Image 1 (cartoon, rainbow, N blue to C red):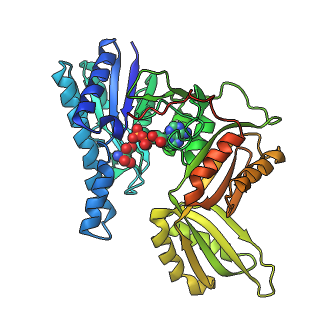
Image 2 (image 1 turned 45 degrees about the vertical axis):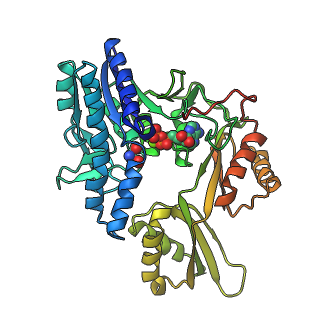
Image 3 (image 1 turned 120 degrees about the vertical axis):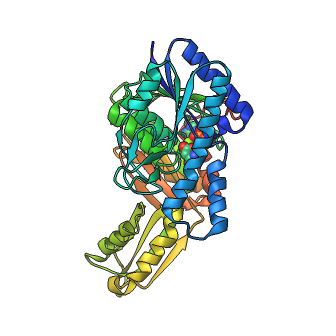
Length: 419
Ligand code: ADP
Ligand code: ASP
Ligand code: MG
């Protein structure tokens, strides 16, 4: 008998018909003799709808109340799945994140799990129940306040539970058949990967492949949780995410996939004094505004005026607070102006052995040039090459790179499984 954690994403429980189907699958797993712990996301687009409601009431909802609001979505879906399971004659019990012992930092909207107390979950498993835990949420021990883990956070709840319970596997049920060489909604001949290492999956997720939330992959890697990504619409085998099967050779580049991300905004600080110091001041202010930061480039000045430019990406929802914080410090840092651009996208080629093979970078740039895509910022490392381009060209960029690096399946093999 195994202990299996199953997580169902929003589209997998978008209506009560789907909820009943999911309940049947959960009960079948239990009746096959396994202990089952389930994490369910909010139904369909509930989280976006709740955010929309908050936006209708105020332009600046407080983070605490936003978390109170958003966590309700997962409470609804988990209770409904529990009821559907009970209707099939199996014992089930649903918990909110705080009831299930998910303790987090205090940071509303992007809390991190710091501790898991699985006592109540274990008690329910011991009495033979299927246990459901509302994903994407926890509680801060000190304040007693409810928190959320950031978008896509139910993946992290599931993997953290699997680690804490020492589960045999964590199954992530979603609306595609597994992890592909690119988003199958953008690249029709994307190839399903049978296996992917934690490291490469982490890089794909960091570059925007939202099939698994980045934090969840980091957690799985740290705790060695075997993750199985598969469709909730069919029984195809899906993708296993686990430790690398073979040590990658740096001699030959090996490309796994192409990821894209349209969730960022580009900020450019112009007329920045050249010399040591100002870049650090800018980044300190960005960090103080509690924003993440990516793809930063600075070029020392060529002109006689001793001024330079600094560009970087921040998550689109941090754009306004970051710009406001920088403006507050404009005089002290001494820059001339700030420009901002939300219509950008980032495309990344992910694999191994890329820096040691300069030909890969040249081929990357040639491919984008042939597709008419202008590279606004480029950064390279051993395991990825990322370029910032116009958002409108992102799909073309992904398809061109996917084709040029021979990642596709033969025609007709890959099928995206959203029904
Ligand atoms: P869920 O609601 O189940 O959490 P998400 O929408 O968060 O599902 O993630 C699944 C989506 O991730 C897919 O529908 C697909 O469009 C997208 N995606 C992006 N990159 C990839 C990839 N490399 N492989 C599979 N899916 C991907
Ligand atoms: N419902 C949350 C979101 O839409 C969490 C999740 O689905 O994982 O981001
Ligand atoms: Mg998701």
